[in-house]
Image (cartoon, rainbow, N blue to C red):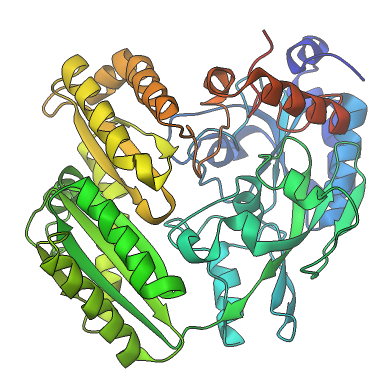
Length: 487
């Protein structure tokens, strides 16, 4: 079957009479095909910025049912949008507004299939909530280190489809580095079972890495075999105040030298971000006085709590003596450590409370972070002098959430509507000038796809289109996401 998604919609039957729905109900059970008034929770994204309209929501119980759904949709030429916990930030897991797409929810597929303690692996279905996977590993005295603010609701399938990052990428890597094998349903409804626990398998193209990060446009991930690690004997957390971003970056460099692989997390927050937390969550005491930048440092040590604490205190002492930090506070117990992380994770919620803002999820080499922020700050100050830069993120792996909050006291929604294109264009052009990426961990989805062609080499776009054509010639899998619109 050929033709674009838009072309295929031309002869679409009304939702109530569409023959596809009867076939889906026969395949997976009538109660698991939702239509009509049951859909709004699936059609609105987490940020409440992208609202679509689905023909129906299909909720399969297992991989065989996912394959049957794809075969039925292929026969009818209907696009399929995979959705896990619907916590994405770029509109990649909600349907468009045509009413012609099937939304496939993986939430019923939530089994932990196997924990292999000898091989340090865990096999989970795509609908497993991330926190459930973490808990399953912990019950065996092991660690699954992927950690996100949305870990109580995001799913493993979505984490892999977007190559999620989080707070421990510095030590353990993105979702891609934590996955050894996949089970995937293709556009034609075939099942590729690649759930190997092998760490070495040099037998051809790495199909696993092809599907990870493809945002559901090449295949639907239904299960994954994941890497586990020994639990660290101790985790020690601290905050340090820095007079500049450059000082924070140099503190990161020192931390890497002094602590090596024990450095698990290194987060940075500018003054504006923590000021919003103080404004909207005054009950969250901040351990340090306001500084231009606050960094959160975490060490995980296999030699015990005393060794980890000594290493962290020695690092911070050297940083203060060398002028990289003005003050520091080390968590005395687990509750204080959780409180420090809670401050960091509350920035996004505080921004939402403050009003509409423009999100940017960018990545740069650590050596270019200071120059990028200086250039971007200056550019925005000239063009939008009342806007507020709320800059925070995973400094350890070069990922900043360089967000722009609407001016205080005005209509934030209207300001964002009028200026989002210009603000984002300015930020992304500055990112490109410093050798960075416009998406570090959120993906492209529907929101960023039009910009991708501007920031990717034409050959890269052409190669991606070739892969899409080869694996999904009918454009059934998450159509209208990730790849730029045809010219």
